[in-house]
Length: 165
Image (cartoon, rainbow, N blue to C red; front, top):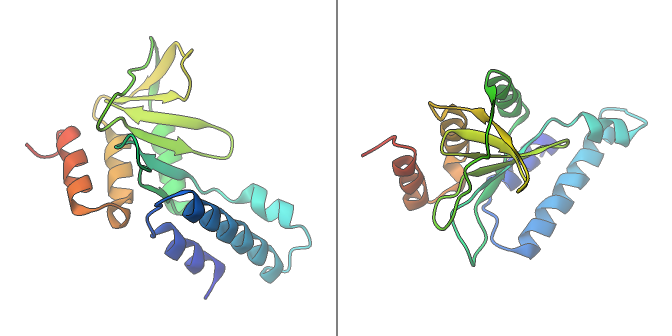
């Protein structure tokens, strides 16, 4: 199995606790190291630094782990293009509560939260956000998680995003 196929198979498995998260992280690091070795690279640090994957966490629960998955390199590039098209606006970002509370986007150099048509850096002291009135980021992330979510989770978030009534 190629390292990329292994990564995809691991990312399709739903995270269910600390032990699984540790296993997925370990498998991911091992896979990245293998990629560097198989490509003939003498520096695995270079391979890891260039890996353009993003981890997505769907905020749904309190008291149990939220679903999470990795975006492919192609999905990450698409997400970055969509984010670059959004406009920054002043104001405190909306914070979620119980139930659906957005998608957390964890990339190598930043962590963002997409919720109710806003995308903002993670943190309480932010005074700006990116406007996404059509909720394109949330819709894209929901579709990217299709194989990682139960049918009821998917439909619940579709309803929250106004995709179904």
